[in-house]
Amino acid sequence: MTLYRTYVLLLPMLLSLAVRAVELPEAPNEPVLSGSFQQQRLMQGFSRPMLSSGHFVFWRERGVLWQLELPFVKTTTYLSDETLSWTTEGQLIERKISDQIEKEVAAIIIALLGADYEHLQRRFILSYTEDAQVWSINLQPKDQLLAEYLESIDISGRDFIDTLSVHSSNGDTNVTSFVLENRSLEPSVKAQPFFMPNPGINP
Image (cartoon, rainbow, N blue to C red; front, side):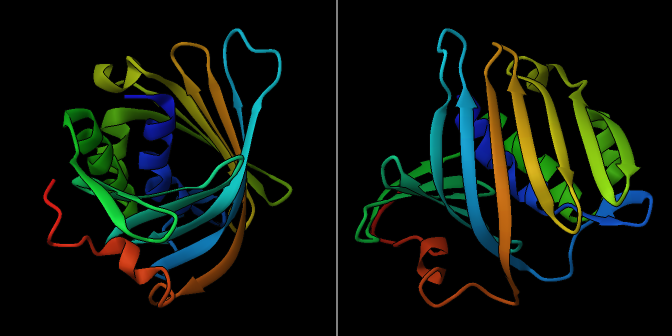
């Protein structure tokens, strides 16, 4: 599985982080978080980072909608057990059942959304610090399955994630800056169809 797919599958877990005093972050109350992102992908052998940007919608009961807008348009929905790919017109073109690694990542997502740190600590070594209202979390995988492609994750923010860095085992790094623009009880009317696959297309 590629670093990019690993990164996006982990987004629901990572977007759910919000700091409360000096304790481990808890999931926010609102089930839907949406906003924009800017991303730098640093790859071994390339002197300049690959830049991209777009918007995201995280729906706790469903998954995450990742809308890449620059340098090209690509819309993908990541659910707990499948991935949905869409055309620029919003038509579903592919449903893919998650493989074993993706299901493992989904289990981690569910654990964090439920504030099940006991489960997370079976997969990661968690280090948490806070300085001048800025918190930082470092996740080091201790599960061999994750460690094969994921070296570590660094997250920092205030009321929400400001910066997320995903370091792969092959030396690539994906750095993303987030701007949280909305918290709500459900996605917008425009975004909702992307979480509901067309029954006419089978995975």
